[in-house]
Length: 482
Ligand code: SF4
Image 1 (tube, rainbow, N blue to C red):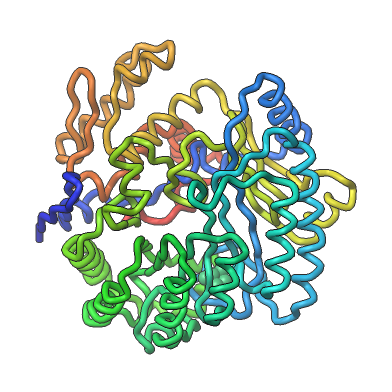
Image 2: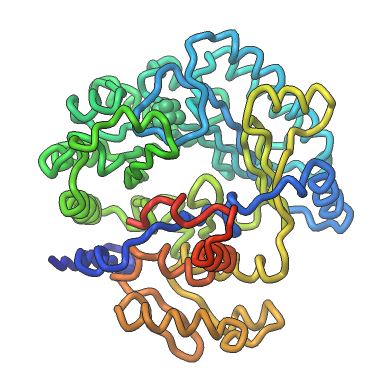
């Protein structure tokens, strides 16, 4: 089965089932390079301070992208692979917010004078687990410490669980400063919803979308998942009909990665209920076909957007970027992340907060930022990061531009990688000439395979696994590329 699907911004994506089946393998999603499993405890709080102070002293200050993590959920969705805390005890959120605000104070003090925020994202867990008053209070706290650009210039987004948001709450979120809203839908089919323990009546979701439009949110986004239990082509077709009718600005279609050895809630999903590989691939083909026919642009990985949406515009203008929240329009921003397990990216460093509430609280009690691991990127990491960014965001790489920015001869430096790329070129995933590496329409769905060639750390881990003497994270801990 080979379908050619042409999309509207002159970028093509071609679905080639045989090729996908042949090359599909496990690999990172490259929301960062190096990936978070390379972080070590040798990089901690003081290294982060040094990185921030160094950037401020050198006047090398970028606008900020702020990420706020709210880890709580009221019930567990069986497909979940996130770092979350499932509880109905609301007092836990009140305690968490007290500590979160102390962390924000510390970051605010550290970044005084370099605190212009162009982008804000609330993720989780379920950010709307905290109530309206708590959210208003938290936003006011952020606004005291950081200087937010005007609404028309900034991108201030929140992930919501439609089950937790009324019309009034949606209006309130807009008043509190959010201008983008992202709704977790996953699937509209009642049987699928039951199988994943996320029963969410369609009317409820439609009401939240209507309220978001009424409130004046600039962009409404919907998340879907393919490969869930009880899903088939017919249920997917019906879900897509409803999603397209709801007319969101962005749609994400994630591949469900069934890894019950890593994620306990997934053990509640019976293997027999999962769609088999061929059906799953056909569902992906259907999603691409239906969404591009409906006028959405394929941005890359799991993301589609209307041609007028900022993501599609940024991609056309070569400004698209990838960070821990996925694709982003703010390439130059340093990412400051607050909350348990959150990951910041400042200059050539990554730093991650403690992953358990106890440790997170404990560090803050000591008046320290709760950073417990991270890494400082080497020149090689920075070079590979930009190569992977270009490929993920723009599907092409100018060898000349890399040689202008870095003191290397590309063909010598990446001799091994170029040999491997030849194999992917023979399979039709890309074309190479003296100056460009260009991903073909059929290579776009397999972009992770192409990026993995440039992943030095992954290569080392694979070599170690081959020799059977590694304790490093192995490729087996990643999801499949499709
Ligand atoms: S999928 Fe989202 S809402 Fe469901 S348990 Fe995981 S983090 Fe919570």
